[in-house]
Length: 65
Image (tube, rainbow, N blue to C red; front, side, top):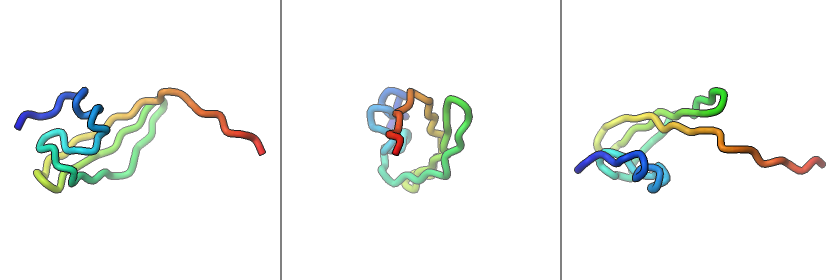
């Protein structure tokens, strides 16, 4: 089975292993840097590992109360 492309992985919302497509994935804590974040991931199905990359896309104001 071929590895997922970035587009396929994003479309699957990161809910599957990009290598074997198993849903048996686990993630470590999220590391946050300015403008983005990353999370080490691994698959219990095939044993492969990867890093999910996140980017800041905006903000939502909170109501003051």
